[in-house]
Image (cartoon, rainbow, N blue to C red):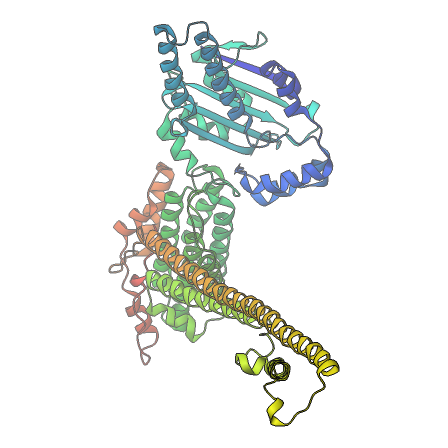
Length: 609
């Protein structure tokens, strides 16, 4: 049995969370600055499913002045509240078990059984590997911003919560929301029961978007259990900070390709196919799914090349081959640096280099140069490899330059050694040593006089007065010697401290230089390693378009139109390959430029399929 609780956000939340402190968490009025700060962090983490607008437009609406003034509720814009309900149930479930367990003595068999059960339930409900989550913002048929959030336990597949919120940019009291969940999650008496056979229709009605319902309908099976493979597959298409399937970028790529075709070709059958593809891109919710989009790109690329083969020989024909190739290269380079899942890492220096290369391809397409024609000699894989190599060289050079600048700045910090650091002990204390030596000599002389040792030398001293003077002189001379010794001791101690401080500062500088060298070496190594991982990843699925001998283009296009009319689910690329064969572009270019060196075949191109 499942239950549904719907109404205004305020009424629904009060029914779900009866404790006042929990309600306060959702209804707390925050300042303009708090809302602004929180939204600026939240918007890049959100995902969008919008078949009529873009993520940029969504972000613009969410970061408007009006939104900052509203009562911003985290999770209301992208379905995060379904996770809150799921976790709230899990916590209450464990809490209830713990309360029951406390009814029994600690060491009793019943208590032990409860404790074991609690451990199992903790693992069941709080182990993240058992959780599957889907959440995104979307627009309904009325153009209102809505949110969908879904969380389930893979071990108990009928235990899930689903949030559908409407008009999340309106004032709090005007927002509406619905929660669908297993009956264990919703205990409010105001909730209504939903029979299994009614579940899908009620969800569809509340969503208010047939396309979004078509997208998510397969994640719930007929028995009401979650289909984990279906949900995981859908999650791969819904990435944070972008629209589903990265359709905003792909749509712009497609429009650019169509513009190129319409400006350069007048083949009615080709233009009709392009028109059909353009229409399908609007109507088919899976059109921009990676594998579908790659197939369509290859189809367009091949179809354009087949059309070129029917043109009269001449320089214009060869130029169109180059331009078609450059257009295709630009698209593939852009797609290669779009993350396929949230945890997928693409080095920023590689990303920026690939995007710059894509820009160059498009620029060259409008003004063909020798460089553009040189690309003809390289496959897509080779160009990607060389771009990664160039990006790594520039990255390494930039980091080394920054490192050297920091080391130079560090080394330029003035560290002055103590004065007289280049003198020995005698040179540093020369004056004090002289004073001390004279004092010692004087002391010795006076002692000799007092003892009468110098009397025989002819020095006649009056015993009374001169004896007294000799004693005083001896004392003064001894004091001078001691003072000189103390001064030397103090001066040497101070010199030792200054030298120790100086050596410590020098060591700090050397250590800092060593640390900078090691840190930048680590950055360089990580950057290059991650770029190589990225390159291996994108080249794994790279294939080359098929080209064979030419037949009649009109027959193939007619066949393609017939199959399109009879079956919307067809593989255009396979039809083209089966029904048309094209001479290698080397032959085409050679015919157009008989006296020039032939350009290698475009069959070297290997698009990312």
